[in-house]
Image 1 (cartoon, one colour):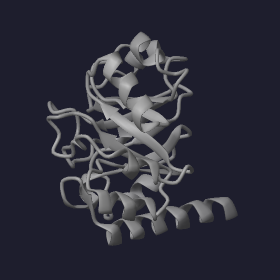
Image 2 (cartoon, rainbow, N blue to C red; image 1 turned 90 degrees about the vertical axis):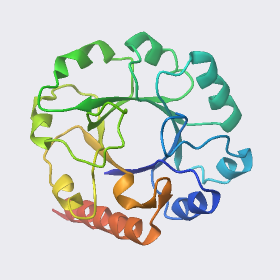
Image 3 (tube, rainbow, N blue to C red; image 1 turned 180 degrees about the vertical axis):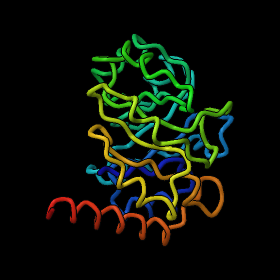
Image 4 (cartoon, rainbow, N blue to C red; image 1 turned 90 degrees about the horizontal axis):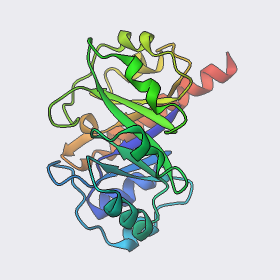
Length: 213
């Protein structure tokens, strides 16, 4: 189970999260988000260990701007959180890993994902909102039973210390990772290191038990 910590923006907090060695760290380049990273210094991102996949999050951004930021900060992955179409997503796969996010509710039609086959590396399923995520609320995870493609996915939306074990017990073959964000914050963009540390321990314990089983 991979761990992605998303919505980082404060240098010292970024450094502290990196010291926990998550698999992915996400930086939001969407000005309307309270977790908008702004223009981070290159030194901040340069010092993140190479084992961590630096991920830039965009919402309906231009291809030119995405290319510029990939090159400037040497991102390993991008997350497209808007209405980006399959061909737009595919255009970046020769440069980075591509995560395509979708807001999910009980009416979500998973067949719409068929057009993204062979054009993205991962999906991310978040709670559907009008603000492109960030609700801090989980959706009904039972709807994931309707997802039948072979593309792995991250689960996002309201994951917390209280429901993390429930997430880890979800029996879906394509569940690739958890996206930890607002429920592990002191304020938007500032992660609580103590709470994250405990979450990492919970995931590690569950994974170890799975291997032993």
